[in-house]
Length: 146
Image (cartoon, rainbow, N blue to C red; front, side, top):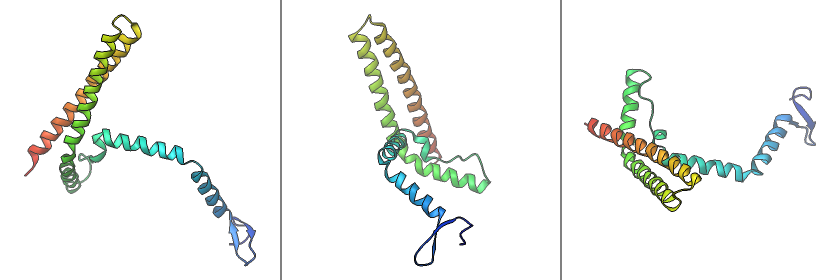
């Protein structure tokens, strides 16, 4: 590549080093210097995959008839993982219920404890709703099996 078209420095062997190579090397160096941030994001993503069941399913309402059947078959195959997610959400619900009960029992007249207990109770209700949806989806997929 000629000097005027993105290359910066001619090398001893006659080749030229392009600006894109320098940019790529600088970018690699920056990525190597940030392993903690990348590792933290991966852990959050893994936690999200462990807790949220909708990441393994595909949208079977879009596409041609063949694509929808294929996605539905894929979803039926992946529905075998739903009992695991039900156990996870049952554990989350039980922990939230225990926390809300204990915090209000230990500090019955403290306003921050009452607010914390109420928030934990609302999160418990959300966890029960998610658990119910998971169990209904599992029953629906199980009833669809040929």
